[in-house]
Amino acid sequence: MTEHDDRRRPGRWRSGAESKQRVLRVARELFDQNGYSGTTVRAIATAAGVDPAMVFYFFGTKQGLFGAVIEMSEHVPPAIESIFDGGFDTMGERIVRTLVENLDKSDRAPLVMLTRSAPTDPKSEALLREFIDREITGRLAALLDTPDATQRAAMVNVQILGIAVARHIVRIEPIASASVDELAAMFGPLVQQCLTGRTPPS
Image 1: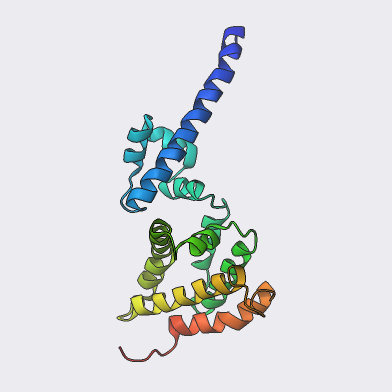
Image 2 (image 1 turned 90 degrees about the vertical axis):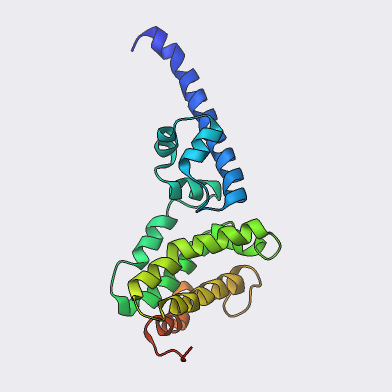
């Protein structure tokens, strides 16, 4: 590396950092305005004045960009994937365990933040609904592949949101102070019932 290159390098780093922050700012605005499905990486890149390839370089995927916008931990996407890896007959317990473990890492977990603000903020409500539909409901319904798959997935969502609200927002006991293992044992069978048990006729 020449001395000239070495002098220019900090400037390039600074420019890259500024571009990344500009992409985040624009993405936050567009996700708020149009929701996740209504916002494209190309639209974000155009509004931020960068090439779409730069967005993918910084954030990997559209999901990664959305996660950065709502300050989602990098561990959340792999954790969600782990729900779908393994036997279907133990998925209920995995859903509860994965949810609680990630919520307990911080009160600023994205699901906690979105759940807390959704009742009074339509934009948060839309983002929360899209996040759950995209990451959990749609995938569960496709995996179940039954006439009542959407209903069953919705019942799972009720359990997920109920645990999140009871443990981190309303702090209902004994849910708030129970261990991960206790909650997995308590709610895992309920979620499994939603997935594979008998349901009342529509």
